[in-house]
Length: 196
Image (cartoon, rainbow, N blue to C red; front, side):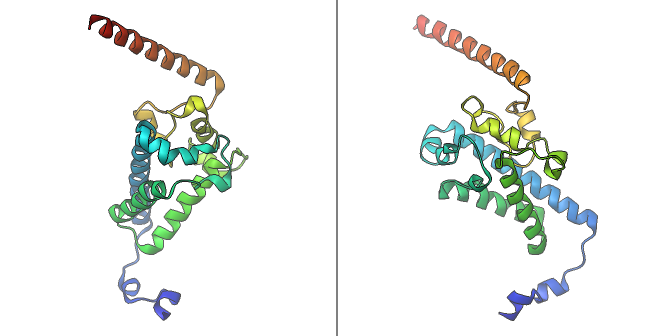
């Protein structure tokens, strides 16, 4: 019990001090792993009707996200997205349990900030990350449920073309293009079924 309280275990005593660069590398690797895992699992939950209806829709009952609702989700979603994603990021980054405390605290605070609905001046998250409360609010709206899946960064969303911009003017342009794609797909499908 003394070891748990003081943190004075032999593993920690024998561990070498990591350089700041090594700590940053572990933090960045953990961010990439967690963000990639959560992006694709989150997107899959939206595309799989069964998973969305029975699991992920619980989180989307919050049409207007707020801070206390950030982690309001089905227990299975918590296991699939947060627990497995967290374990993978911890293991693949090689971070120590102490560093992981800072990483998971950061990820949790970022999640709460994304759901708070506030864009406050001087917020460090808004200075360093493009996905913020405005970004995530779009995802919780009916027109935005197939956009903005990322948790920690927007990189994968940009690459996968699922990033929807914050400004209303740009959103309208993106949604018009999206509707045009749907219309073209519908025309192709109708033409195909006429041939049958």
